[in-house]
Amino acid sequence: MPKQTKFGIVLLISFIILLAGIILVYAVPSGPIVTFISNETKQPSAARMINTTGGSITTVVLNATTQNQRWKAYVGNVTGTLTLDDANDNTIFDWTLTNVIGEVYATRFSGNINWSGTNCSNSTHISLEERGLNHTNGDDNITKTFNQQSHKGFFVGTREILANTCFSVRTYVNSTSQSARFEEVVLYDGTNESNGNIIYATPLEQDTYGFDNSTYDFQMIVPENGLATWTSSIAYYFYVELT
Picture 1 (cartoon, helix red, strand yellow):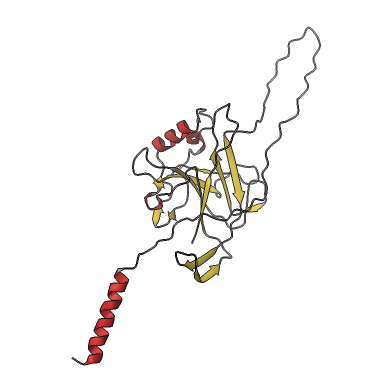
Picture 2 (cartoon, rainbow, N blue to C red):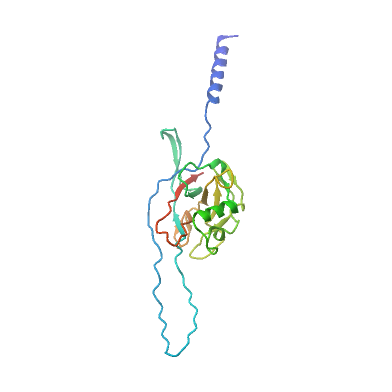
């Protein structure tokens, strides 16, 4: 056999061995850089006067609107880059995105998320989360809030979430309930009923009119501790997946 052919075989074998040692890395959600724009809340309404004459009996219906301290919301826009980096964040090439497609995720858990095992939450997962957050009011707990199964399909990394399989909600547009945009679902990353973490996910909407008729890429609501004596706040960890 000619030497060139033998040399070519050696190179081919070496290349195959090299490829066998490559670790395949699949895209997963990553932590974003956060820029705070504003934080605001509804102020209590002023008292309403009732003035009736002595000796009378007045029957009234008092309809009150009170800010719900057991929930909080996050809205905003997403910018991003697709990149080819090594383990030390050295970049060989990147692409700035003008049209963001993907999802925003929020979770109370600060550790490593099992993205490859993430799937829809079931009622047991949600009940355990309600117990952990003292969400005992059946009118506004997580079960009551995420009471639909109406959403588009999407991917969490390589994990496919099929349409209409997760408990979901759609936040408002122009202060009005709607059924077309800003959907949000409840996910779970555990391998059994109690060893995982609840993750809230919302697909990105490019410059879409939102709750206050301003344009946003995402809107989502997450639960706060429901104890009446609770005076602190629960931290949520955010991830973004761009595709």
